[in-house]
Amino acid sequence: MSKPLRAGGEVDSWCTKCKLVLNHRIIAMVGSQPARVECSTCGSHHNFRARAPGDKAPSAGSSRAGSSSSSSPRSTRAPTKTKIQQAAADRERTWEKAISGKGVRDFRQYRVSEIFNEGDLVKHSKFGEGVVTRILDQRKVEILFKDEPRTLAQGLTD
Ligand SMILES: [Zn+2]
Image (cartoon, rainbow, N blue to C red; front, side, top):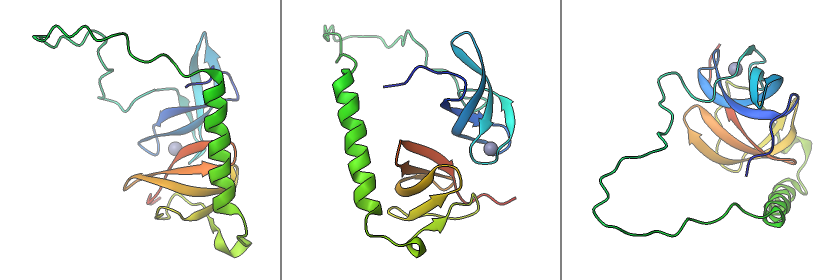
């Protein structure tokens, strides 16, 4: 369920400075592809790169010797728009539930040097209030903001 990309929109890109695939804002597009992006974590500008250097793109024709001639029906269709809207509404409810009744002191200012735990309440200078929904790894967390979840860095030292 990806939105059409456009300048000013957001995309996950490899950050040449953070050395992670993180949320970026698109500065310039070339055709339907982002060309220049701004890292939401460190603010640096660099070329768009969908994956970490060295990561191979998933090869389309996965040549696995298919011994079992399972005629798998063409897998599920893309979710309909209503399902996407439903998911967005669910997310917003989750976000509201996490945020509601909390005071300013329950929120930690988001910094890349912080280490987060699932359920932590975070205040981000750009995205506002959010809740940590997943620890992706030691250096990445998923934070649900009011509009959408974003992958941001954690535990980085300058
Ligand atoms: Zn960065």
